[in-house]
Length: 264
Image 1 (cartoon, one colour):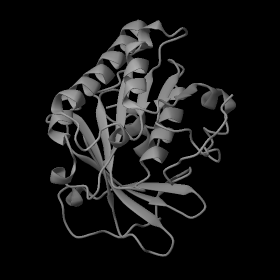
Image 2 (tube, helix red, strand yellow):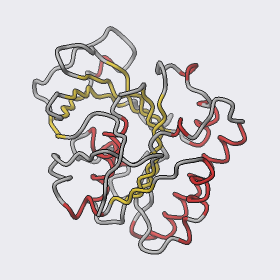
Image 3 (cartoon, helix red, strand yellow):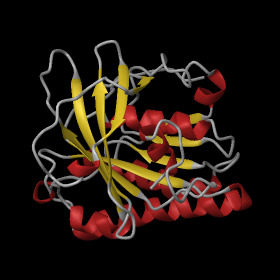
């Protein structure tokens, strides 16, 4: 997976292999509607932008209404300027953008993010169409990695919205897993505790890596609190209430974003 996302959930610390500039395996970020996928992608983008290895390419179908400007990282204009937003509005536009990435001038991105993959995959999409898009995403990230050379590799994170979070409810998941060996599931956890929005983030980086889990709480003021999930909860069990005790905080917008914004 893109190491930047793991550092976001680990409060900026590299967690295991990958802290030396390696991006890790491509990752699918899976979650139900309003599960803060866009917020976590933004946090990962800002984390990667602060590494100094290269810009970040953020793809989404429509312009964004607002950015998490109340984070320390987002208040740094140098970081935000390194996040390049592009808005392919259809599958042909997305494919054309990826296919022509090698022609784009400037330094190669150190992180490639795609928000809202489900919007590009119609219910009647053929398996070969899904496989082609996934392969093109990986090929584009590999091209950027080649251009980065000794400066590191280009990470790839793709957010896919699900309905219930179960494997059987995710169209084409079997096909996508062939290309994205790492997955991070965002599952509701004790929603309805006041105005708090709580999630359980479960990261599986591959067969040789242990599952990592966190409790993520979004407060009404836009603050995000992250605490490691207890070790004994690594397997599905009774729901755990979100707690702010001994938590680490990072302020950001927690809603999935839509609309328009002008980026300088």
